[in-house]
Image 1 (cartoon, one colour):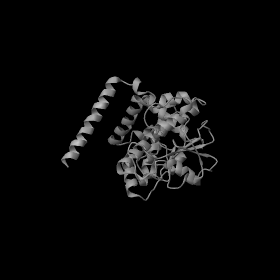
Image 2 (image 1 turned 180 degrees about the vertical axis):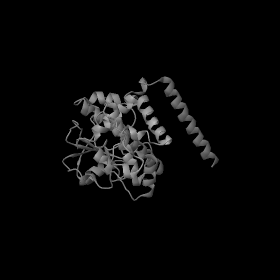
Image 3 (image 1 turned 90 degrees about the horizontal axis):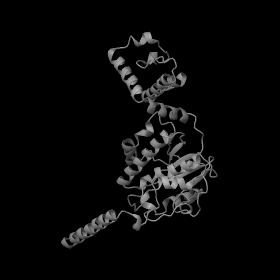
Image 4 (image 1 turned 45 degrees about the vertical axis):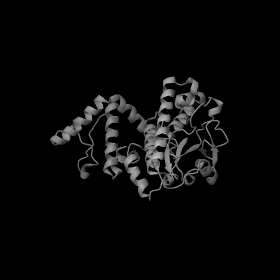
Length: 313
């Protein structure tokens, strides 16, 4: 592990490994010799306690802050550390693939919301008990707007601890065979029967909260057909009754459903009831009467306001 540590050139990556290795030694009660991080010439040595006593006051304060952090957040750090070590030994499948070819067609608002969701997705996947390999494919590395939004909202992609995430401008077809891939689209005709450990599941990188006039309403279905891969939808109607709202769910909700079904050996109903919002499985008569009245009042007020504005114009 230390050999891998000293091979890194980037300070940020090396710093992440430093913290991970030290916490591992501390938590497991091993001989926690401190790695030398202050000069390049000393990176390959593991100094004893005597060296620590030679550190400057500011360096000792830094070490003290690390000790305090571990003591205060020991349980959380232990969980995150174990997850990180699991990620280093990830199985190649099942895998989550996000098709980012649509980012170029999104408005600035939709682009920022999509990358925020991707950041949530990467964070959740990293902290799971058993993470899946996560890929952002067809990610345009030359578009300035996308790169700027990535810098603002998707900084997690550059974290040395997030080893389960890969961002690539290439197609997922360059990394997985067509037989391994299942593209998930709410507009597909076939239901996904099971979540298999030998498959890679593709989700379209689109947020439906903002209407996108440059995208086809069935963009993910068309993309799957264009690539010649199998396309399925979640088998929602087999297990619950969808009573209101759009059937397009967030990326995080869909991936959580897939993960839950896989870990529970096929319990779709449990996953749907856990991750589909209550508002979608309740009809108007089951919802809060006060909330319905308030919604009607707001709708009527906006309608009247628009009428007045049109009359003035």
